[in-house]
Image (tube, rainbow, N blue to C red; front, side, top):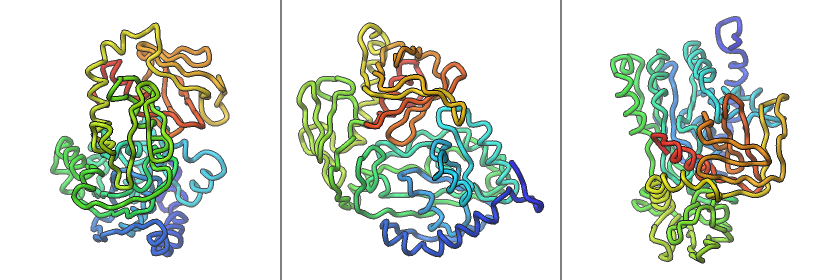
Length: 394
């Protein structure tokens, strides 16, 4: 990490000025346009690690407005590519993190910034939530917090998921709220074990968007509310077919058995399905995969599911190579076949999803991406890989 003469990472003074002018100066306008409301609490720690649940692409803006402090965010390396990414890097200086790859370099940069007196913001789930519930948080984040020598701030966002669901084609209108949950001083963290810190982080950041809706119902109206819902819901509860849903307008239907349901402006389904909301369906889907893991793994002659017209690349930056385009991606119980390439499930080292269109993964030491303009279900690919290979969490 390059540093300026006085010890701060290069560009931090510029980033802080940009935050002051564009962030806090225009904060009232951003809140008005995007319907954000923050309950402000002053942060006492001079330097701190900031952790929040991840609901939308606007989360970093909301969090800066809600804390009124400069934050150097960890951001997906995928989002920092191209001309737009170069502008964001110059103005805000995010710490890049490559999805589907090792996080060691990113962790080193986080610690270096904190020790240099720069606040760092992280969404430890690593991805925006697909189903409205805070996702898996790696235990390593507790060690980072403890080793940093800085304070720890936990922040919670509500409403962001229903306003801009990760899977949705169009956003909705509605309220997003933010509030500081807890602040732990460096001295407090030093007295806590990593396990205690991890439990505190998971507890503070946990959100169930639909449980909040039950307590205080709010409408999130918008057009074509169900379109791309098949990116998160990929197992039919009636026929058990994987990847059989087709969405249109406010509804989604199974092309195998004809099951149909409607997604309303409060985020709930009609009575055509046995689930009240998307999270209930998602939880059932995960349990179904676990229960059927042996039979799924044994299905090696006929594909479990497939996606058409996808693109496969290998490498990053100038070393990135196009391996296949307009290809059929077929998922079997032991492998993925794509454009003449075969990837055994046992060879995957890391896997993640970028937004709604890209699957990122490391396979036998090489970095790959699968992309589709029509969208790819990160939940489907990640879930099948984890379940078939007996991984601990999904």
